[in-house]
Image 1 (cartoon, rainbow, N blue to C red):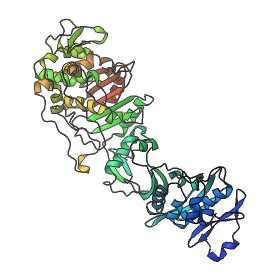
Image 2 (spheres, rainbow, N blue to C red; image 1 turned 180 degrees about the vertical axis):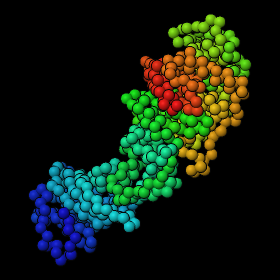
Image 3 (cartoon, helix red, strand yellow; image 1 turned 180 degrees about the horizontal axis):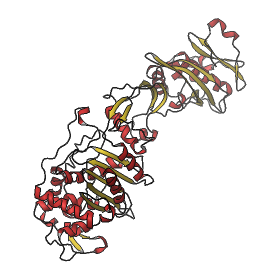
Image 4 (tube, rainbow, N blue to C red; image 1 turned 90 degrees about the vertical axis):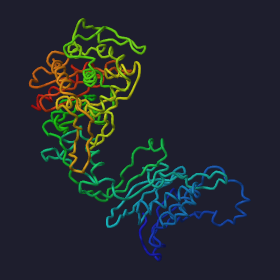
Length: 559
């Protein structure tokens, strides 16, 4: 290893043996120098004249030990001495080498570099690096191992270091660079509504939520970021994706966390985590209907926050919104007869009910409770293409992409469609997309009588403006919709799951067909008292049997 000594001590330094050629790194002018002894170690091309070199034949054949050690000497000595130009000239890509080596000192803030070479083998020379990373008043030692390979340069066959970013650090890929600085957003200590800390050790589902809170509130919560040396991936599209995310190599100092209080209820969050545990494709959300406060959110699979960011067809739970529209337009009435045939064709598509059932001389209440598809599809000829879209936006606050929850969310999608796709949207298929947060909000709107945008962090924390809906349902429509959901919870497809819940309650089940899946996604949305909830189990089957028990258990606990 290189030691930092005066020039007068050089000849007394003991050499290290590199593949039969003695070599040692010694200090000079504040940096080590790579020196080679015993044999023809000095690179001949430094002694040639340009005209003589031009007259030589292109070098071919295997590299000699002298060529390997001599080229490594030139490169490592120059790099260690801070002579970036000379180091780059010893490679076969001087431009790329110069840029990265310049950034090594300037951007990565790496200094006092000491290089120790190992034994060459087949043109490859391993070496270790010891240095110091310094940023403002903070510094920390850095050590790692790397390697270089000597090859013949195209064109003249001269030995040169085969340049790749990994020569500078093995974690680098071509196009990457090293940077030392503040570690992004400061850390955040998230608290539940009672002041307890939220961690992934206690609540495994909250990993993505905590990350999103840091991104949103890291610079607003009173914390300070740490200092780190990290790999910054290249920005060349697909290549960056292949390389992966930026990576921290050395933490010089830890950040000081700020504090952000959330609306999560610790007991309900723990219960939600338990309900989805072991169910990788299950997600659930609970809200306070009168305010929009998110009381719990959990995902059985922790890699993606389906509860807040999922974009899935909601199936028949969408019939809550569709029913409100049909009631407003006098296209349906709770206790009046309403068609529920086995089939109904519209826009060239033949729609049918589950197991091809029909309800003869039945009411709209019966069709809603049993989730009759054709009862809704049959009204498509009476509707405009944008009617459902307007209802979702104006009454339920969906599909406007303006929710400000405090973390990243998908706010539902109800696009304007025509013909068969419009008809399919009426039953939560076609282009309609939702997640449990959206559908919990739908039940909350029915229970409270008006839309309250869900939120995880109170808007008073950062002065956010919550989304609003432009109108509310009439008293008659709202009463009718509550009656439909209450009957479904007591005697319809949601009855088995809601058995024992009791109190002022309402529910709607859903099953959404997805191309390529053997089983549909099972949905369930419901309310009890001032708490609304929704859940989905992907590829689970009927919502009353899969998502229903999860939602009902949490409503029971909410009291």
